[in-house]
Image (cartoon, rainbow, N blue to C red; front, side):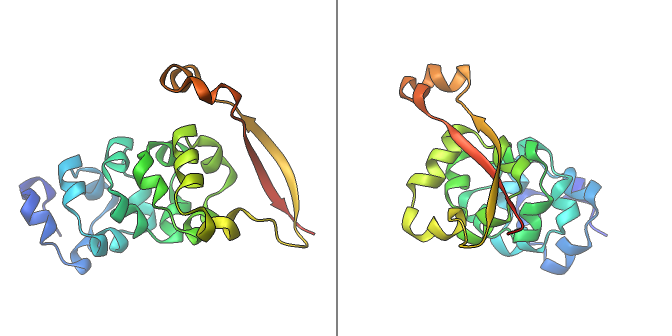
Length: 171
């Protein structure tokens, strides 16, 4: 087993994927944000979904855009809505079409309006499929999310924004 407390940032970066996979949820949760930032994309991919779900919001927020892009759809699906909200805006903008499609309704509802804007603005053409409704799918409206006070103070033009959240139902 890996003694996380004895590792330096360089030591964390040197861990093999087998060592990362062997780490427990407690060991993953014990990593500092600096150590999380030192993980390679291969190491991030090697983290078990349940162990990733045990990471705190500061650790999730420390993930770079490249690290978030390396997350599997199973890893993303394991994140709580609070953890999904903790993703930083640039990391959220790096989500691939398949990663966006893997998010559940509570994760989507938890995303900040800044992250939704970043996702919708960056490379929209390659993401259309993730947000497009299949020909036979039916959608059930779940929520209409308006920007909060903090977002309005930071971006007054957001006052007219409405993010619609829907869930796909059987055709």
